[in-house]
Image (cartoon, rainbow, N blue to C red; front, side, top):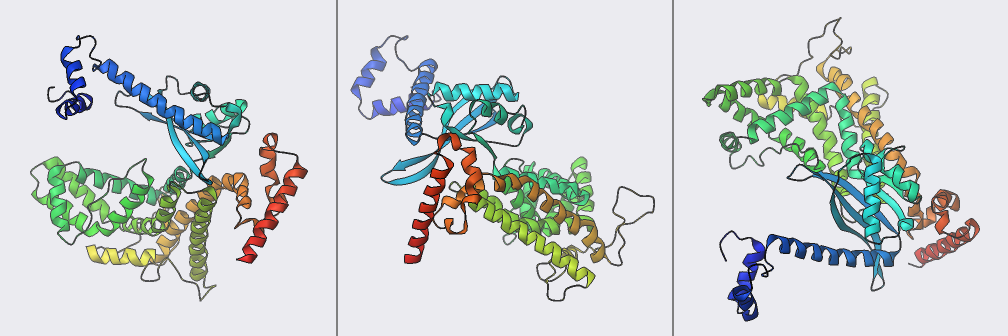
Length: 471
């Protein structure tokens, strides 16, 4: 074997060196067209292994009877769209039930319309001998081609699998909620600046060395590039950037003064100016405060064993927290409440309080931007201080945008399948049949009559309530 022959041939060489005489004899005596170590044979082995694994997964899913399909598109190194298909089902093993998500197949997507993708997904499922009539759920991203209620994938699949209720990925929904907050110009500009700074500093080895020198041994983490797909990293990027703003400015000033590359030096100077604007500092502090709360939710939504009820509990906590911040801030600003905590300017965690601390640390006084009577592209809100101005121009619009988006994006989850949590023993005591009758309507073709299911629900509720009392 020659170095660079690949993993498969390297493993064969390892077996020969370990004393496998039959393999040695085969490789030394077989004809060149019968060694079965060519790339074609290797691909066949991979396909066979994949088929065997898929057969085991499908057999387990068929024993579970009902399943959900999860799909997404991705671009491979050859710039071809690949459709990734996974299935989700409840597996029973040794008397225990466990939710499983299993990868089923990659397949190149030639056409990206909703109808074409739906047809391709159904063909993949049928090729694995899965019963489409037992498909009870589908999960995709929120793109129009996937989620469209008329021509989207979910709508086309539901024509053949009426029980397949569509559920949007909760983590992706949260990302859309945070993106909606970018409708506030100051927040949008802040994100753009953070993205530009991290890209500028991280794309060059020389600049990364300067950043490391500025951070020093006690400086902490280097800047995190804002990722468009890994949503947790977006939270992380803002939190780290806020913490390292002083060191980042120091690094940019060193680049501006010491780099021989004139273009890099000019870019560094312009970024220093952008980072020392009052509006940027306040917007960054607002985002840091909000994302410190939503980061916990983002991590929670991406847990492998997270269920819809727990997700909605986390969403409700975030929504109620942000709403309380909004109400308390409004009450204090108008003098209607004396006992509320103002998360805007109260120390040590108030958004504006922290912004002032950051400004003092980098030598910037927070001031009201210049206002002009005819100007329409800037907030000309009435104010008598920087705190009042930024409360009305940034803090309130930012909270309102997130709260509105949270209610819009997550409401469908609450109105449909969330009520199935009523079947959980620890929760059933707080629900009545009227709370879950809509769920019965969704799956009525697979269930007994309403009277029978209602009777079973009441019996199950009685058993669970009694068990709770006996503990």
